[in-house]
Amino acid sequence: MQIGVPKEIKNNESRVGMTPAGVFELIKNNHTVYVQKDAGFGSGFFDEDYKDVGATVLDTIEEVYAAADMIVKVKEPIAEEYPLIKSHHVVFTYFHFASSEVLTKAMLKSEAVCIAYETVEDKDGSLPLLTPMSEVAGRMAIQQGAKYLEKPIKGRGVLLGGVPGVPPGKVLVLGAGIVGIQAAKMAAGLGAHVTIMDINMKQLRYVNDVMPSHVVTEFSSEYNIRKRIKDHDLIIGGVLVKGAKAPKLITRDMLKDMRPGTVLVDVAVDQGGCIETTKATTHEDPTFIIDDVVHYCVANMPGAVPYTSTLALTNVTLPYVLRLANEGWENACAKDETLAKGLNVVKGKIVYEEIAEAFNWSVDAM
Ligand SMILES: NC(=O)c1ccc[n+]([C@@H]2O[C@H](COP(=O)([O-])OP(=O)(O)OC[C@H]3O[C@@H](n4cnc5c(N)ncnc54)[C@H](O)[C@@H]3O)[C@@H](O)[C@H]2O)c1
Image (cartoon, helix red, strand yellow):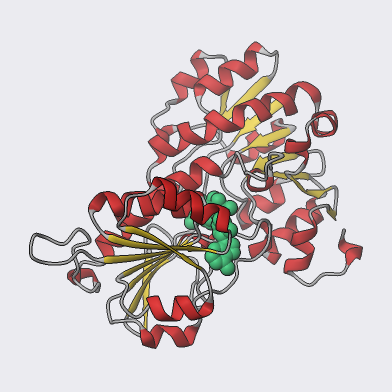
């Protein structure tokens, strides 16, 4: 198969869909790989590294899309890429369709096969291709939140760990999944007081078992959230309802109950956000303020740490890329239920129910 690895063109996105080690495996399996010039540069991989393992390096994104049957990338295609995607393409990347009707319509129109990393799902319900990026984003959420709590960048001026004689800051984590647990772990490591909420008791039991005693679990309800936001300094949104828009757990009217300089990090922004006032931001301009509350809503947080993120992502995507390349998408998905769950939009049809539901589209779109 002809496989294309374009350079990511989303703002401040330096990850790349495949490392030279991955390209090496594909070429060993008799595939041809086209890598766009400088595609790996931001992640520490040079064109020479790709050439050394047998890839063809092409100058432009247009050439990569034109040469390839399968495109392996990181982020959802942005408007400039829509016209490059054709009906013969299999596109394997993060899509987050439920948060963008424009993207969904563009991919339906392209008639390509769109396999979304974020909905590839194991039998136990875990999401193996989302996990490493959630691990990165969960850990980063505290790093970023701690920074934006500083006064010169409009935060409350609270040091999360406190100091002897001064109590630590308080962190509220919504969702005790991958993002939530990693965030709680980092916040606890800094010495902050952490409250973590979920509606899944199994998750709360697990957190309660493994975390130190300054991480407190609480069932997620509007009543409990309204109570906690009043005195927590940093609030992390890490909820997920698979393939659907995130539930709005923090509504506009709640902001006035928070103290000025409270920081909200809505990691769930890629699924529409779990905070009503969330709107996606970029690493270039990551925050905005409403009612004196700082919002950090970067939709591609792991993009800021591409060295770590590219390796973490490609560790888990490569086995699926190999299967798709070796067997073709139809056979590979027929044989592997986990991979088949990644099929979102196929040849002009939505095949993942929650996407149609997110836009209130009728079943005709499916
Ligand atoms: N912004 C970024 O750069 C970035 C990076 C990685 C992941 N994400 C996003 O972060 C979100 C979380 O991902 P994850 O891997 O941790 O998911 P996950 O499935 O591991 O965890 C989500 C948790 O949310 C809980 N939940 C659902 N409804 C809830 C509610 N009403 N109250 C409290 N908890 C609730 C679920 O029970 C689950 O435990 C996703 O939207 C994901 O796409 C964003």
